[in-house]
Amino acid sequence: MSEASPSYTIPFARPHVGKEEEEAVLRVLRSGWLTTGKEALAFEEEFAKAVGVPHACAVQSATAGLHLALEAVGVREGDLVITTPYTFTATAEVARYLGAEVLFCDIDEKTLTIDPREVERTLKDPVVARKAKVVVPVHLAGRGARMAELLEIARTAGVAVVEDAAHAFPVETPLGMLGAIGDLGVYSFYATKPITTGEGGMVVTASEVYATRVRLMRLHGIDRPVWNRYRTAGAAWYYEVVEPGFKYNMPDILAAIGRVQLRKAWKLREERKRIALRYLEAFATRDYLILPDAPEEHAWHLFILGIREDLLSITRDEYIEKLARRGIGTSVHYIPLFLMPYYRKRYHLSPDDFPVSMRVYRRSFSLPLYPDLSDEEVDYVIRSVLETGDAAYRKRP
Ligand SMILES: Cc1ncc(COP(=O)(O)O)c(C=O)c1O
Image (cartoon, rainbow, N blue to C red; front, side, top):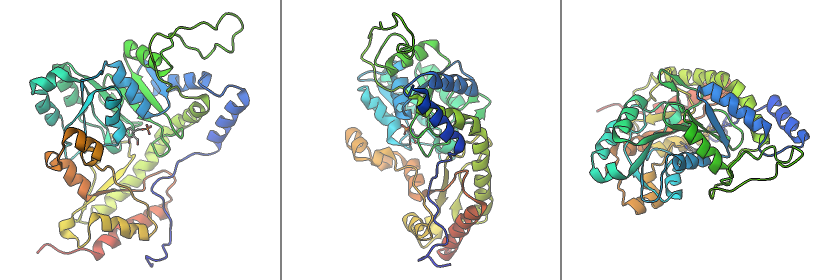
């Protein structure tokens, strides 16, 4: 097989949508009601049931959901939001929407999620303890953050916990579903996520108070549901604006796709898991590969593989390039936020302050992992990863 003419073209991600999603969209288009309405309400009810909490609020993205969740727990100008730098910028940027500041704590090397000991240490600083409003763990790749410890630390310090569960559906744990354990949790239905509506998100919470606030701020700060205003005859036209809210409601076209995807979510997770287990088994045979932590409780949204550059004559970037030449799309999750000019400059951050994130970032890349990968494609990815590494292998001196 030649690198110049790869036998396959395997994109990094491919959404899993089919006939049922098409029919759902057509049903809504033909219904005459395109924006938020009964599909969105049904999606919320079904999702709440699926995660085992009373309230689910459909929104346009997880970014919107995180914004609303932080707003609901009372994050305001000058407050501190504690989170991981090993994430997408959405997790942190929403703090800035509200005028709050971001405080990053390094990750633990096993789970790649925020290290509770770092959070505890940070909260010992009296200024931080006074200003911190919320901790936002990210269940990176679908592997849960250390929630029991984080909850305990947060409760002791009197701060809220908002879970960024963008990668983590559906994952059952002894504490509840990932995303439904903290004060609020937020899922993403972006095109590449475990289930998708193209763009979309869901905020979940057990708290009536938070749910009411999220619903209010999701739609312009209007004090009552307006879905039925145009449907009912009579005096349903009156409403009041009680806050300067946002425009984050999910339209029915997307909610209808979400309802179909929700029904398939467990099956899709099983299919991703099956591929992840094949990767794990194949890659365990090489000492130059560093495997992701693989507990049973995992959404397998991403398969983040590490390489030991000390055992190879090529770098991580060259590894990625060689796989690309074989037609295999990969990605890097994530470029840590302290390397991004905005956060670096605003908070005067140095990579030396985040040794674990830096180490993991330098060695890692993510492989294709989605239900529509065929067995042959998985074989090809495995073969390509192993042949690339074997060809560059240099034994320990
Ligand atoms: C960890 C994490 N949080 C939040 C988001 C934002 O999700 P959305 O695109 O639905 O706004 C993403 C999206 O990639 C993400 O990976």
